[in-house]
Image (cartoon, rainbow, N blue to C red):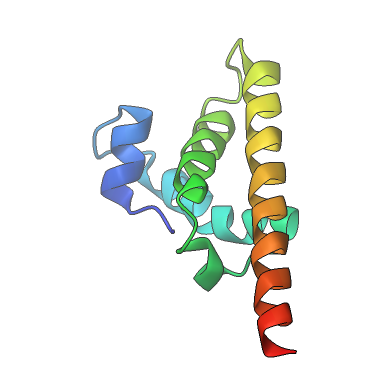
Length: 100
């Protein structure tokens, strides 16, 4: 699920302002990043609830790059992406078995 600018601002706890272009660029990059990390297309991401959480955490990590808990946040994101990819593979295997 792609984040909207309103959602992104709420996640980052910022108001509309001079960083909107940066925020929009980050929001735009998230689905491709998740697809590369998990193999789920953007359409498949829309069906996976954990993607919203992963997107929110990625946005925070990228926007607040000087954050003191970067390593903890990165580990959390990596774990979520791994879980999403496993779940996606399991769904694909079930669908393939049903077609065979």
